Image 1 (cartoon, rainbow, N blue to C red):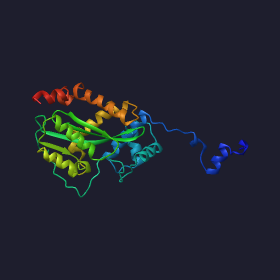
Image 2 (cartoon, rainbow, N blue to C red):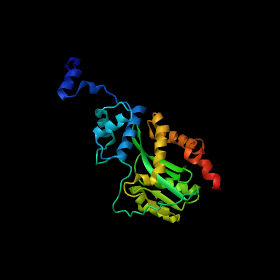
Image 3 (cartoon, rainbow, N blue to C red):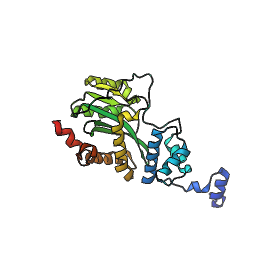
Image 4 (cartoon, rainbow, N blue to C red):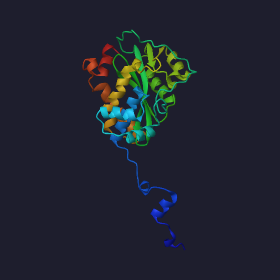
Length: 269
């Protein structure tokens, strides 16, 4: 029989193990505010990856966020990012993969299915990070297809592309960044098999794919930041609902206050 008096108190156990008692009862909380801050911080860091936690803190404060450097450091640690040494980013380049020139300079975009663009962004959930890839018709801003994944493997990008090609007429050009998903042989083979020209952003030139970058800002600020998404399943269903609204309900100023779907199908698509 064990004598209950022989057990060490919680205080004694913590002292013995050099553990702060407060951590014994702490449970992490992920709020929509925390998700918003993490995503805004990541957007700033993508634009200025040379910023450390001090300048990121200052930039966030300039934008009106009540945040200190300790919180910024913690968020950066959670996301595994640091100045000049990005660990958690969506564009990972394989130098052995062939790179293609950027074909959109000076090109007049005047019809649907002339140019498709695609990109990957990340979303912070309670249980970690997930990755969203979307395929956009550049003329209409219509989202043709998308996928959400817990990993950065090329397969979810290929599934998105194949779905788009199965439903819609193939474009003349498809533009991507130089990430490994889009320079992989499987991706290039799929694009060229559909007789599509491959175009890629210049290295470090996010502005070459600015329209889908703006879409990422739209979906984050108008939807994801307002949700409290915890699981991949929840995120997938929530994003599916937003995509319907974005394509068929939300009016776009740049499209003359029309929806992407109405512009996309206006020329017989």
